[in-house]
Length: 309
Image 1 (tube, rainbow, N blue to C red):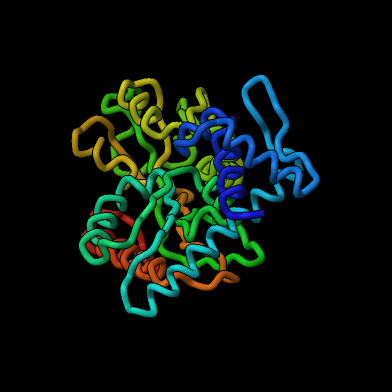
Image 2 (cartoon, rainbow, N blue to C red):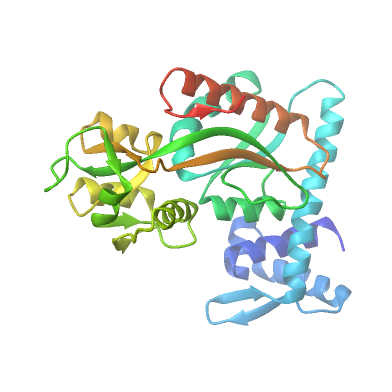
């Protein structure tokens, strides 16, 4: 097995088909297929099963994919170690951010990294916390910000901040009370637009409702944050989000918010990374910059939250 064969195999796995993988790699499809076929012959197993939509990984393919991503990360770390020996900060860093945090952190973090370490290739991956955890564990990410991350072997988590959650409502919502707060009783009585079950935010909200012995009135499940906010602004219902997630809509006076009380509903954001892997100098610099940006945003009031010191 050589690295080219493994790289082509991973490209096909990620693309879900040989044609799309060949286009991304800018190689002829027969050549790519030949490399994967030789790899299967060498290993004595089938790595892909053909479907009507393309290809899917077999159990053997899934095992090779997991170790393959880890191998390429190790290669990058080896390169980074050699570069660091000359005190030049460079390398590839993949950082995962939940959608609501990406909205406030992406611009200042990219600005600082490009200014201070122009030879660091930063890749920011925006997704739900559960997906980020999976990609972190299988080696596709160097670190990630997660919400209420479960304890996992080999995973180190460092608390960053606590965020209160807010009831987000249309500017003109019939029957709503005045004030800056809303009780869980009131929240449960309103038509809600929330992500589907399994989403981290939905889990936090449902736990709070269960603790108060309340049943939520979820009228529509929407997994796209942007579409949830548009639907609320259009008067189709209410939702529950962090203050930072709707900063732009508040500035444009598209929605109104009230902090949820009785009980207060909050979530904890943690910085997570695999502790069995040798740290990358470039990764450490990016995480240092990220924590600095988080601190500055919270202390300036741009990100309503409570820091963990």
